[in-house]
Image (cartoon, rainbow over all chains, first blue to last red; front, side):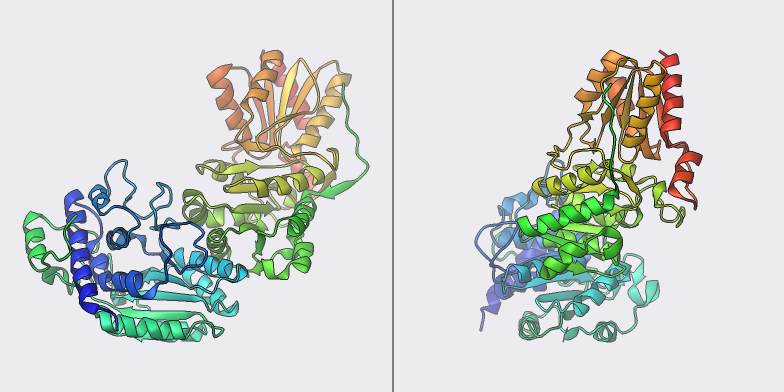
Length: 281
Length: 317
């Protein structure tokens, strides 16, 4: 059994990173980042089989692709705290001449990033390509990807979802962050997507549900199950139900913090709710 | 004056197909993707010989571009195949973010470019693709002139690390460049020596430029024809050297004058050696149905049009 206390401490620290990063530049996307903090921490520390250092081709290791690139704060924090680049560099988020662009990119050579994302709906196709490259290379490692639920409104996803099952891309675990919210409000109000599980199943994917997507034990269990379903001729989808803004009381139960930074007072309150664990950058 | 003849006509897309088949045999990292146009793109041989390295994506070009970007992660060199319209405008943001901005080693191979696609009409006849693709930072843009050059270009781009747009066409056109040519990306080819006018042509218009130069020679006008197979990066030196001598230029392309080769040449001249220029290109218009020859005549993209523009530009010196 992994040391979940350590993962919990790390998650708290990642939350502080996210809040401080977006506060400093008064921009960025804290809501979705906070909602996925437990997932990223668990994925990078317990689930993925990663090599030391960074190599673009990623032969002989599991790879991760972030499709909803706007939650870059959580991605950057977890990458830094997984050793891909110095934690101090989080200080440069969204600043001029930084490798930590508003949305993740390979353009500035930031270790850990393998594709630019931000314009939504493209990551699943990229993840499928990387998965098929792994098969050609006879590399048995897996491809993980993360997508927003609102992002599923982009049609390219459904091209990719259709393709992945038709071509038996069974070394892919695509996770959808079901937080039920997007910029303009609840996904149900903006463009209701109905039964996402039924849709993936209709496209012949295996679906694993993680109802408590902010609970590390639930994530560990759900992702282990997802992993056990790979290699059986079907792509695997994880529906991760999360709370946008998780861990900061005034950021939860609302879509207001999708792309808004806290002010000084709000930051102080948010940090008080998440005391320093492993040390601020 | 050096003249060119031909014994055979073939489509440039078949040059791509032959090049891809050869790459299948020589480069194990080359993979191919197609969006339901295998026959049109002449990809059959590659597929027959390398079924495991071919990905049929169906009618889903956006997904194809993303998969191609992903395949590079793991060292593959993907060649995507569909019509030029569906290779560019339809998937511009996918190319922009997942391929160009991400610096991925994808070869976007686009057939049926321009008016010479013919009877299918304007929905399929893209005349804006060169502009779209040359505007993307880091994108190499290549538009070869005949079967042999298209085959050579296909082989060459596999050796170039970075995104490439390779544009070719549907109709049978004269083969007039050598079968064994070495294709150098970004290196213009001087086809004829001349002193009165420079004709800078790309793609199907290179043959038309050579025909024009023959007719002009008979009228006592000496034209220097430059084959610009690479529109980006442009061989500025070759253009400037020629125009220093002729003091005027005609650019010829199967593309809108907005955003095409002609505008790239204009920029080079404006910055270095302002000289009169005339454009053989479509005039900010869509195409229509018709035979390739009818369309090229109606839209002013043949040797007759080049001759007319050559005389006009000489008169402006």
